[in-house]
Figure 1 (tube, helix red, strand yellow):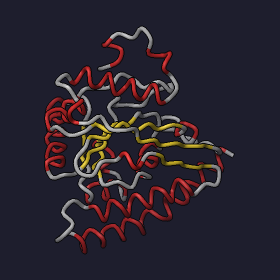
Figure 2 (tube, rainbow, N blue to C red):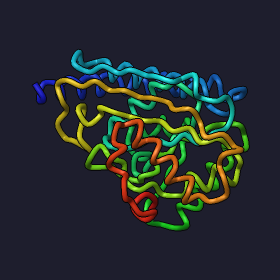
Figure 3 (cartoon, rainbow, N blue to C red):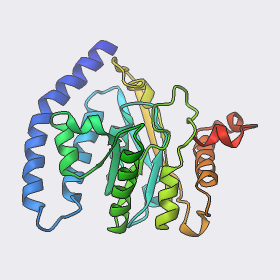
Figure 4 (cartoon, rainbow, N blue to C red):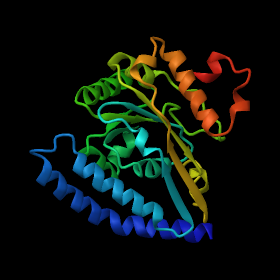
Amino acid sequence: MRYLATLWFWLVFLSTAPLCTAIGALIWLVTWPFDRNRNALHAFVCGWCHVLYLSWPGWRVRIEGREHLPPGPSVLVANHQSASDILASMGLNHPFKFIAKEAVFRTPCVGWLMQWMEYVPVKRGHPQAMERMLEDCRGWLRRGVAVFIYPEGTYARTREPLPFKRGAFQLAIAEQVPVVPVVIEGTTDVIAGDGPLMGASARVRVRVLPPVPVQALGEDPVELAGRVRDMHIEALGLTAAKQGESPEQRVA
């Protein structure tokens, strides 16, 4: 069944990607003069991603806590275990800019859509590229648009989140915008890491936790990162796993 689920997903993806890219290009052209944040195109792509997730009958996605998504600028931070986390996150259907690996922006169809939506590329391991990414994020926040970051920087191999990198939290403190924890579960049953095979059955849950308001951010991004990671761990039912952790184990 795993082979069948994998084959079916790629058939659906490859058959819909060219059409969705063409429709996306039309949306971009028509809305360009008055939709400078590309919200219409983003909403369309969110819908496509949700259809991809529902394409296999064994996969189900539940979105909870949308009421916690604040209007205006914020930094959304989510745990990261699977390539399918992105599809699951798009189910929020909230206007935000994803931060994603630079290489993804060079892929046909998906990469083109990401460029048209003006998502933010990042090249890991290059300090100048990281600073450029943060500057792009600052620009979007100042325009009133949320940004979506996976602060672990890579896939966790267990349910427990890896140490959070501090960049997202430096950004929130500097721009004085709320941090919104997003907890993702079950995506490793769709695909573990980058795959290649997909699971035949998965129950995915995406939960938006109450945001950390501006007045509670503090001034220390390391402390804030550890605090938000603890919120993820508690929401995942892994409270015991964090007992005795040093600050170095919580924040990279």
